Length: 270
Ligand SMILES: O=C(O)c1ccccc1NCC(=O)[C@H](O)[C@H](O)COP(=O)(O)O
Image (tube, rainbow, N blue to C red):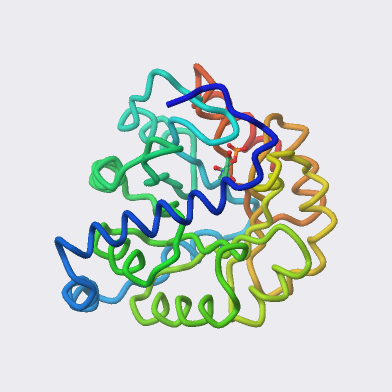
């Protein structure tokens, strides 16, 4: 993987979606859509564990496991993900977000499944969802939640995916970056809305995005502030603007002592 990212590239989301389409097409050659749907639907319905954990009082922490990203290249050469999840657990993480996108994030379904078998924490399968097939895959992998990115889905596709998640008893974290996307998420019926502080078109990060958009998310939905959290001061800021949860990746992945960094973030949220 090329660690030198061209920051001017604004097509990365399109490329991620196109590659996800290819991956789904390939997967369907092994297990077709009907079979995957049947497998998923035959499993016991989930109990929306992910959302219930985020609904508990106080700010919740969704801690991410990722080796690389399009904006940062390799984040963590050393990637002992099974050890990392234990450190997150020990430091009081509420949920785990695990990237499964293989090309830019260097994730995989296998990594997800290994972590799944190691932790009791609710897990988000973080991938670029463009096909219902991926929802069934996620359910079969034991995911408690999946990611839906507004920039990749129109309102009706989003509503359809949310209905499928509802039927399977898993949650959808619906990610928005601006007012229009939040409106789309709300009218599709999203109950967990993540505002990304990272602009996925130019990779700039600004925590004020969450602040600016906080009031656009209805109070009955859970508001997750995503990306760009690097310090206890960031946590204090996001708590003050009314974030119910934060999703943190890079700063934890880069920390040599993840447990103490996460513990300090959690103290800042009290
Ligand atoms: O992070 C990227 O470069 C990126 C590029 C294109 C699509 C998604 C991308 N990242 C996903 C995320 O937003 C983050 O993994 C997540 O919110 C955690 O952010 P951070 O704490 O800043 O690592």
